[in-house]
Structure formats: structure tokens, C-alpha cells
Amino acid sequence: MDSLFKDLKYALRNLGRNPGFTLLAVRTLAVGIGANTAIFSVVHAVVLKPLPYPQAERLVFISSQFPNLGFDRFWVSVPEFIEFRDHNKAFQSVGGYRVRAANLG
View (tube, helix red, strand yellow):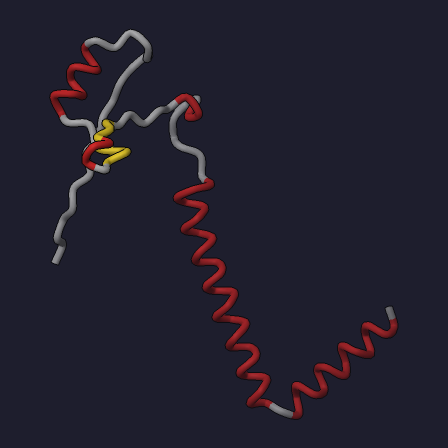
């Protein structure tokens, strides 16, 4: 343990002798820690945070397939959704959503 404190004193003494290098090292650490925090925040919000639904593991995503056209997963049309919802016997409830692009400029 004594060796660790001696090494720490030596490192701090050398950093004090070269302030330009010290500033560069501190800035590099700050940018790295900031970028890591930002990326983890996005990953946590999008991937790791549980969905705000009870028993979220029971949610399913339903899509259409058109293998001849090269679409393995394609959005379900509104008429398909209504037919599925009205004739559903397998699911407790059915909901839909629609994604749209918007220009805010």
C-alpha cells in the first residue's frame, strides 16, 4: 500500500511539472467520460429501461411479410389491423401505432 502512495505522489509531481500535458489529459478524460455518459443515457432510455406497461414481456409486434418483394417485415395496413382486431381470439387486447416523419423547421 505504501508503494501505491509513493507512485501517486510521483505521478502528481510529474503532472504539476508539465501543465500543458496535464490540461490535455484532463480534457481528454472529461470528453471521454461525457461521451460515455451520453451514450449510456441514450442506450438506457431506448433499450434497457422497461416499458411502461404491466407485463411488458407479453407485448408482441405484428407485421406483414412480402417475400417475393423482398420485405420480411412490413407495416400492417389500417384495414388489416381493423380486421385483425375485430377477429382476434388469441390476444387480450390489440392496439396500433403509426410512425410519421415531420419537418419541424
